[in-house]
Image 1: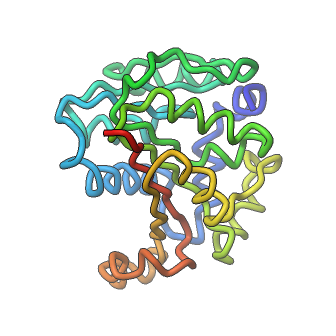
Image 2: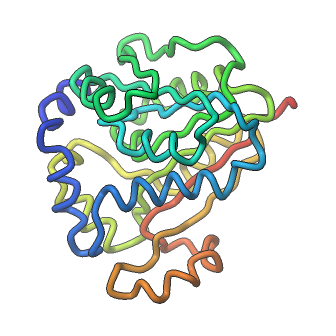
Length: 231
């Protein structure tokens, strides 16, 4: 994954935006959308000065939007791609970024040190054989009562599947079914799956109905939220 994203970082946003063209939106729109979702769901449930990690932060676009939503928090970003981290640091000077090792699959954070760890479109790039190890590592560094949130593409949505198949950066990736992600996370605490981003821009007037559709399993994207047990 490191070499792949080092290769694409210069044109990463262009590839993303091209793949999303049928939605009428850009990758920046979806990055900000997900950051606002985190804020809507969790801003009142974690401390104002929360310790927050973006696992697999890439070029830091969503990290910056999360920083905007949680301005009093300490935001971190990790990614195995050094070139991505270099780009992220330039984009978000107020965030602490570092390169994590794919070989050890360990993160340089103390046990129970973070209030929130989120990961957006990352696990479908990680080999399935490594998912349990990485999830255990995320659970290790989250405080009891803290949250883990995975944003993923929904393979039950035809538009999402089409976009996925036409994105060069996803050519070696494999989509995660919502049921799989739920089973992966529920061993660490109370877990729910929410679906969202149902309508493209041409039908944006219908987006106000999206909060009513979070349990309908055909949204283009979904998020799995786990509150770690043991508060």
